[in-house]
Image (cartoon, rainbow, N blue to C red; front, side, top):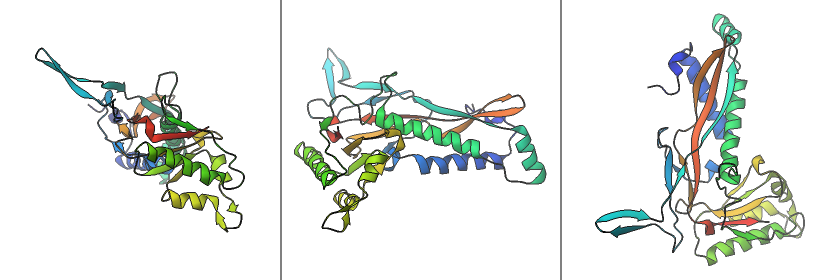
Length: 274
């Protein structure tokens, strides 16, 4: 069964390839979370839920046995949500492209893929309160520390160094990543007095270049985390793909979709600046 309903679309294989390539290229350009988080999957669109095990000492899963019956204790399961965005291709544009061999304007595809990618990053960083999904910045039990004024002195570097210390003191080692909102990223683009070195370059050297920014964070948000897969990852059921929905007013309605879930396995691996 073609759950993407592509057989319903009067599209050539070449047009589908152009749509697919556009979605992949756009998602690769926009997505931020996937640049530093490990991908678990793809597991298939039929995978509706997945285990969310803790690797924190004292909270890890363990097998429980009694009376000849065994089960895995302390294991949680979380539903993998579907993220999507719809777009329309006008039939006259397609006919014009095919008849005169003009390139088809795929701006609607780009816009839909960008929106879907932003939704994934928003789910990763901020979660979704209405459905009870936790994100990196608002999960219960993460480390929090007061943020200094990043517009003066060496405060950004000092705060990041202090956050690294918090992680190492708790035995969290590995790839350290700084994720900040665009305004904080710009505040690091200044020369540290007396050094001739940009503040962002000092921090980048400390973190092996692992500094990322995303517009979905809004303003004045920053977090340091350890992105090793034993601490967190992204479970992917269906990776981003395009489905055909319907013919409406002779125009073609399609949907960019994916199923994805952030799994935080050890909340001690995150330090949020407040």
